[in-house]
Structures are given as C-alpha cells and as structure tokens.
Image (cartoon, one colour):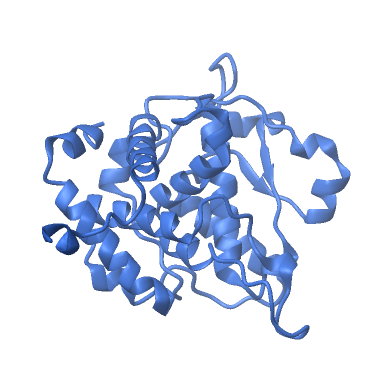
Length: 269
C-alpha cells in the first residue's frame, strides 16, 4: 500500500543520470567559475532584448550580439553573416581552431591564434561565422534559441571533447549546454514543435532544431535554477502555462537530490 504514495521520478533513471552527468561535464569544461559568478537566466523580455529595429537584418544582428554576450563569448571572433552568403560560400562554414588563456568564457577571455602569437581577432582567417533563419524573425524565442544552439556547438567543438554517452549524444548535449549558458526558458518554450495550424499563422520553417524533448529541457532548466538558487516564480512567469507545474515538480525533485553527497560531488567542478 505504501508504494501508492511514493512520488514517481520526473524522468526515467537513465535520462536523469545523463542530464546530471552532462551538467557535471559542462561545469568541468565550460568554465564553472563563469557559470557560478556571472551566468544569468535569460528571459524573453525587453529587459534582456531591448530596442526597436527597422529590418530583418537589424533584428538578427541585435539578437545575435546580445545572445553572444549572455553566453559569455563576446570576445570570441564569432561573426554574423547573411543566410545567402553563408550558403553560397563553403569557406564561411569552416571552423578554425582557436586557443584560449585560462578562461574560455567571460569578459576577460583571451582568444589566440594557433601559436599564441596574436589575438585571434587580429586575423580574419580565425573568424567563426554564424547565420540565421529569416523565418524566425517573428518568433524571437526560436531565434534566440537557435543562436544559443550555434554558440553551444561552437563551444563544444573548440574544446574538442565528447559528451557523456559519446558522439551520438552530441545534439542533446548541445541543447543542454545552451541551457547551461542560461537560455533554458526559451529552450523549454520552443521544444514542442506544433505541427498544425492555418497557413497564415503557422510556418514550419521558423521552428528551431530540437534534440532534447520538452520534459528533458524542463529538467535542464530546473537544474540551472537549483544550482543558481533562482526562485521558482521568476522562472514560471515566463514559461508556457502547461510547463509551469512540470517545472515545479522537477525543481522539487532536484532540490531533494541537491542535499545528497552524490549530487554535491557531481556539481563540485
């Protein structure tokens, strides 16, 4: 009879363990100090993305610059380029190998060329190019999430490391790292891809690429909130209504886990 009153885990054991292991992996390799001291929960509000723009290009550039800064990568030689130029020139799709000082993210990051002889920003051949999906201009959360995915992928590629589970889990790890960078609310809100709707209000080409499904993104977001001690209400105010209860469940479970030695060891990087 007692089993009837036991709380069912939010996710299955293997998925929960992978998320916890991958968060530990992210803390280990992507600057735990920057995460603890400066990473913030990025919200879909004018406080984080202020200003008015008069064109698609201005919108894409404005969101790009702010998202890059929130990711702690504004000192990286990452440049925005138009979709047409990116598609037509394979050179823009190549990624040079960069080298770093002590930190990999944050305002004081130093990025160097191969021999450490000069700043990477002094050599145009060290630029990493990112483009955007014009269809997402009217879906700003998808646009932000797509940029964050790109930056997370670049971060992982530059470190040259594989996530827990191996290469086959790289797309999922990219989504988790994007949440680790602070974009979990927008990733949770855009994880479910609506397939229907009328022709005038639905554009399938505006959706971002999804690797981690909705519940798993909510759990990643809850992990960020628990580690950063962010009040539940600060998050739920900006989540889709059907995700708010799910987020509270995930936070409750992770808060209980956070008191165990195993959890503290996982997050001690």
